[in-house]
Image 1 (cartoon, rainbow, N blue to C red):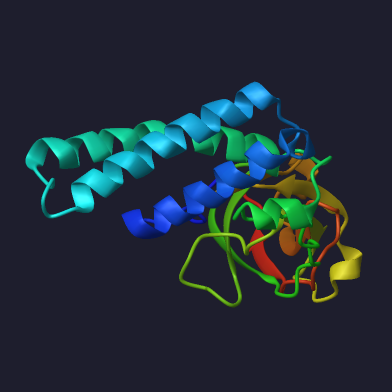
Image 2: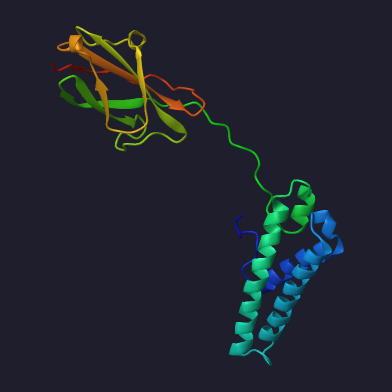
Length: 221
């Protein structure tokens, strides 16, 4: 739970604390609490407000009174944040009651995961006996070796023929890759032939984006 809903200025914080304690004291069960909880909240709130009044009055404002106010503030926030978190996560407390206490409402909606809309940019960087090593980037960020947001990995397809191929439908699925560089292994009969690699981004739902361009390299014996 973030503390952004809690005012930072003492005068604003005292008003927030007074509202919080007053509403809970009037009907603790409404917020899933007991009367003893309301008493605890009221006590720390009143202690902070009393210390703030002393520290704010020019006639009684001293270094010790300011220190006492700061200590009372810390003690109050420790207690009220704990109860605020408990109430905020209680599904039995209405959003209206949570808002009346000055709480941020929990965000229970999940943003849908969109299918990838960009394509990978493949680079074949090395050919060693029976293996080709590759890297990937995204067409929108070709200078960064990273996957787009929301993407789980790279679906890789490889076709082996006497020449480079342009049609990705001719390439059988090979693997899902999440790290780079990645290596593609080839059998002995593939030596001397040309491997053409295609790929698609894939999100966590298994949805894929558009095809990459094919990149080719001869398999080394």
